Image 1 (cartoon, rainbow, N blue to C red):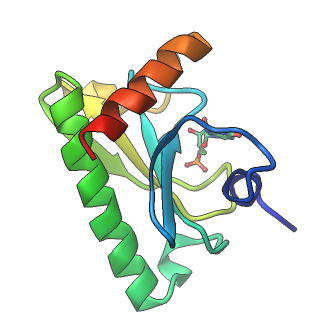
Image 2: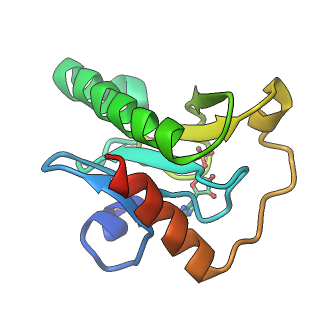
Image 3: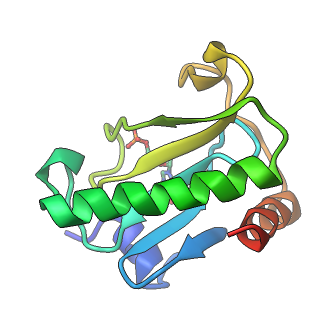
Length: 130
Ligand code: 5GP
């Protein structure tokens, strides 16, 4: 079955795109922990990140690194936190989250509600540094 992220890759569901190449896509998390919370995915649908073939696994992380560098330029924060959870969507993805302190990475925190124009502005702003 197609994951929701495969539908995003296929353009069947919209996203706030941050960066893309032939094999990988970065877009804003729809329920962000922080402004500029990004998900980085391989376009190929594999549920568990450690089931990715080695080359895709490595290239996914290199792509995530270039996205994180752009995020750090675009957003005022101490670090870009990186984590993998994968309990909700069965399509491998890396969370990149602008953080100032360790608690900013707590997925139990209340999610932000941002307008679509704010989301679009953030995605375009990060993209301008990519
Ligand atoms: P995880 O699988 O890592 O536990 O969580 C999946 C993440 O994907 C969550 O942070 C959730 O907000 C995000 N998410 C779920 N569905 C969508 C969607 O349709 N679009 C976007 N942009 N993010 C989603």
